[in-house]
Length: 344
Ligand code: NCD
Image (cartoon, rainbow, N blue to C red; front, side):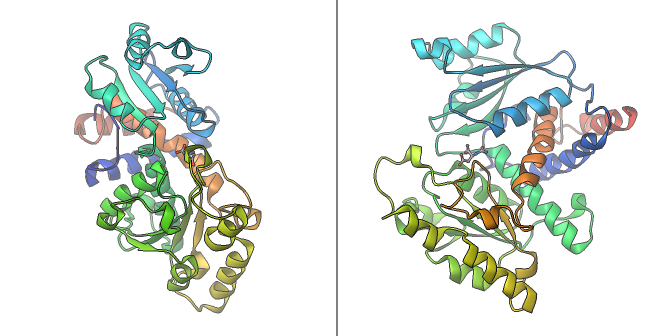
């Protein structure tokens, strides 16, 4: 694997290989010294043209746990604000020795352009491009779902698939790269996805996507789901009014305290398939009180912090596969295991 640009078209075997490597990588978290020597002498550049807290820190932690050198580049305060182009910026960074570039950009297609332009030789990881894709977020969400399913079934995550798992992706689908990347990846992995949103926040063309579309969150929850993935309302990408008021949005589309209580009641009564085990996901940053109530975000069903933790393992796996070989390359796939075994 040379780049990771999208989950659309990502082969199932590659995705599963990444998730399995991420399981191995997560073992490092429990060690006294949270470091593997596998990317020693390699340089990972975080090239962030859009604000980010957790994604940038997560890539940084992942690269450092693999012993790579990390250069963080934020567009604000750089020559980009003086009008330097993506091409010049990327070439400058490569001249400084970047082996991989992790890019976040407000324009859909920016990561692909960087990878395909021939401007640089480094591997490119898309850390979010406009409303298009955010593949590592989808991988960490799939990792979280797989662990959840394995925990419920008492099986090993590495041997567990997502076939038939029911996932509702709820809210601002229109502006969400997280929704798109998850839809493609979860479908590839066999999960059954329902998009739930106000009609104004369903993209034109979504009728052709491999998902059911619903405008009624309660109906979907009543039908029974294994996970609800709440999306952030992306106010910064909204030039118009997409819903009447924040209060109305929270009441109809938010995972509020009343919906949490209903789910807990159904779970306790065994009334609804999966209700006892339904998890509530959110990629962060959360608008508490809008798409998710504090009660839900802080409830035992919430996987918000597990997602953050899993993000580091998944990004370690991605950087490892990009820079040291991976599932497309069986000879290096086992090298990961050898490294993990040799390193205390
Ligand atoms: C997501 C993003 O930036 O697309 N956040 C993240 O990566 N943790 C989702 C969002 O901002 O709503």
